[in-house]
Amino acid sequence: MSQIRHNWTRDEITAIYNKPLLTLVLEAANVHAQNHKFGEVQISSLLSIKTGGCSEDCSYCPQAARYNTGVNVQALMKVDDVVTSAKAAQAGGASRFCMGAAWREVRNNSDFERVLEMVKEVNGLGMEVCCTLGMVTEDQAEKLAQAGLYAYNHNIDTSRDHYTEIITTRTYDDRLDTLGNVRKAGISVCSGGIIGLGENDADRIGMLLTLANLPEHPGSVPINTLVPVAGTPLQNNSKVPFDELVRMIATARIVMPASAVRLSAGRLDLSVSEQALCFMAGANSIFAGDKLLTTPNPEFNSDMQMFKLLGLTPKEAFADAPEKKHAHVHEHA
Ligand code: SAM
Ligand code: DTB
Ligand code: SF4
Image 1 (spheres, protein in one colour):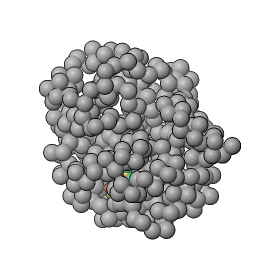
Image 2: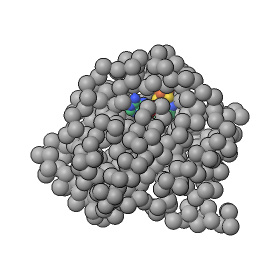
Image 3: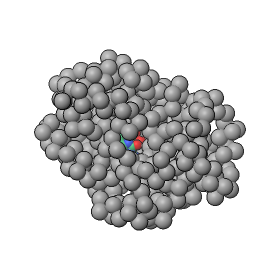
């Protein structure tokens, strides 16, 4: 097992990030093999439980009400429909089910009560339940934990410096506060970011530095590549060169050895061999299913073919937290 450090310096991470690409991949692969079952990949399934109409100005996001992106606003889904979708995802091999809402923050109303109900039901299926609902207070995080929430996704998105170029309606510190509230409630933190927002290498390194020096490393770190959506301010951003994605994944793997690194949005633009290099560099989680929240993702069957070709195996639910699995079995025995 590698030592888990929370005192990384900018210089150290910069030196790792700038290594010759294949040297970097080799080092990351070694760290990966020491800390994880090599070739095991977690399959997460995403469902947008409340779509569009969001008040925020995140300049990458198709769901912000202020941009004309053609996304139809949909009210919060019914619990039964969510459970049906979770069962289908589970049948396809997903061990984690992530529910996303286009909210700035959670409010203490009947919608939140319904989300708590969804969390209970999906946890009852024996899946790791994750939510991404915007900002949460300590009290709300505690309620989610009580309902059986396993993980909470809230991305820092980019570096503190670049953040203000991307979002103005809430701050970097707001994000870090939410991560603190989630951590205090004993929920696994899922936090990463997006590349392709017009940031430079120093911003990417700054984002990894912030994540790696949190009081605890996030349980999972999604690395998204911008999916440019017509109507958003970033619609014409240039495509991120593939080697830069690999660099980002490998560096995340080395500085956060025990975390799951998720090859997230943007896979539709990657060939199987490009994805293979990402898995070699330490990615060990993906979102599977034909849709992310509002944008397309590779077809489920083509992902299964990729798993077969590369000899990847899906990770079982609660492999990292057997005590939570037992808690679940007791409750539903
Ligand atoms: N509204 C909540 C929030 O912002 O925290 C939860 C949902 S939000 C869509 C979740 C994350 O999706 C964002 O933080 C961002 O990192 C990612 N995301 C959104 N649009 C994206 C895009 N076009 N390309 C890549 N990632 C994107
Ligand atoms: C994350 O880091 N990526 C996912 C999930 N967390 C919620 C979302 C990607 C969204 C891509 C744009 C869309 O489909 O709307
Ligand atoms: Fe709203 Fe989340 Fe999209 Fe920002 S990323 S506009 S908060 S749905």
